[in-house]
Amino acid sequence: MQYAAERATDRKYLRVLQLSDMHVDYEYEHGSEAECDLPICCRSTSGTPLKTAGYWGTVGKCDIPYRTLENMLKHINATQEVDYIMLSGDFINHADWMYSVEEHVEALRNVSALIRQFFPMTPTYWSIGNHEGVPVNSFAPHFVDERFWPTWLYEEFAKMGDPWLSDEASKMVLYRGSYSVKVTDGLRLISLNTGFCENTNFFLYLNQSDPDGTMSWFVTELFKSELMGESVHVLSHIPPGDGECLEGWARNYYRVIQRFSDTIKAQFFGHVHFDHFTVFYEDMHNISSTPVGVLYAAPSVTTFADLNPAYRIYEVDVADQFKIVDILNYSADLTKATEKKPPIWKLLYSARERYGLFDLSPASWNIAVNSILQDERVARKYIRNAFRVRKPSCGNECRMSLLCMLRMGHHNSTLYCPQNIPGRHSVLTNNKKNKYLR
Image (cartoon, rainbow, N blue to C red; front, side, top):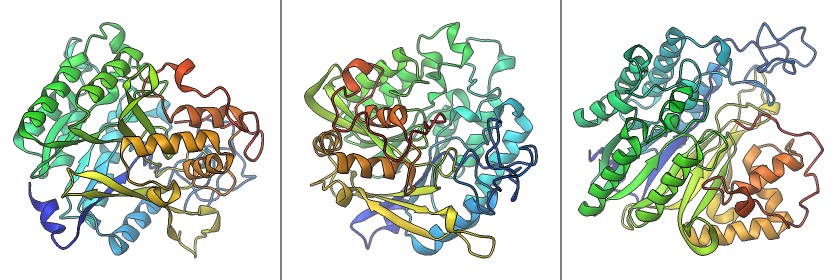
């Protein structure tokens, strides 16, 4: 499909929008209790209001109201040039004990219709998040009984991809919830379903050996792109180093990144809600080895938990193998928004400027990692970026989790979690631990 490139003929770079972890809550209620003892607040069932939920959302243990997503998309449409859109999963609210197929289908259709309303001619690509499963985190491979297959979900995502997916890509979606699509000449996007790495996907405990052949399919698609000289961008949801991803899957994914490091120019993920990145190395057990890849985890649209909503724009160099040349992160401070004063969306930072990067190569990001780990001022900036709030609620445990993410492409925490960091035992703002990391 040439459309994305044609839109950018008068510009040096493609501009790509990533929206992640929307978690739109259609039961969000303005004025309800925002600090409840339930898994999710800001609903009519949250109890007697002491701290009331804001009109546009609440920086706390709440998901985002539909109107805030609508306001964000209206702002993006009015202020940004976007060549194509990436949606990295988790469109459903966090009330996962109440999930139903009917609710999910309605929510997915609502989000899809809203995006088409503001971007009717903009190619839109998506990946499946763990909250798309019913029950949550459940994605049955084809070796189990057909009645458990998430066919309804894959069919819905195939409809969301129309008309941007080829017939072949749609068939891939209908089988495994993953697909490969040509974005423009020289660039292929591969959407990888990480439901098959989710450690609470109980179907995987029947057989964890490459469910539905997804990892083998991933390698085959990359090999074909390698032979054709294509660059590849990977779009997915759960980062392999996250605690919810099975270690066997994570290591296999890491090996694939190593093998195809010349082909894979970027990895776009979500899930953790924080804004962070992860560097991959030539030797997954040696952080002194050559950096070979970078995973970008986008900030969430939802405020869950203790976050401001955000979106991200990537600048992609068409002339240089579709490498990422900058990342622009935008957010709105919901504490300043009222029913009569809509959110004001502002540029938070440019990754290149914030971290003083010469370029966005793996080597440059590795230098940034060392700077974050060795310079307390840079570490504070990194953590503020993660939360998009002035004073993040991030105690020691939260802080260490964020620092570990910088190099944790799999689960070797002894290697990747820094042990001697300046200020390691300090608290950024207070001793409140953020227990809601995803």
